[in-house]
Image 1 (cartoon, helix red, strand yellow):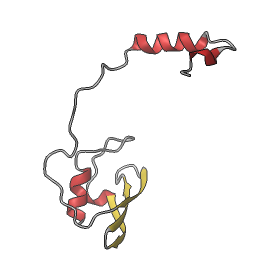
Image 2 (tube, helix red, strand yellow):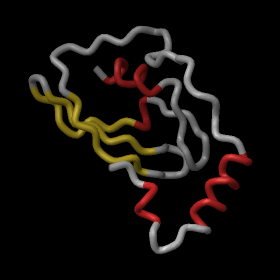
Image 3 (cartoon, helix red, strand yellow):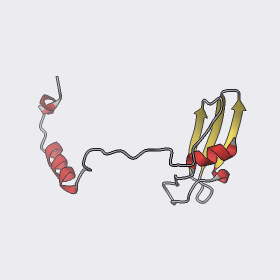
Length: 101
């Protein structure tokens, strides 16, 4: 079971130190029929990512990436952020008129 969990986190890394997750990063806290409780913690810097409650009867993970990259909207540019900042900065007491009805 732990090998299958390692595959789930194989292509992910710690947001603090960028260390990849492996079997040492995963601690199985509870293993019952249909329920697995695990804790994910970076083995390098110690950042704890908390508990996950996974409902599986039998986990099967492909070797490929578990996520599919799809086309989405254009990313937000620096100019978009500046425009939004100026808009919010200039709101007055009637700001709620911009909210949808």
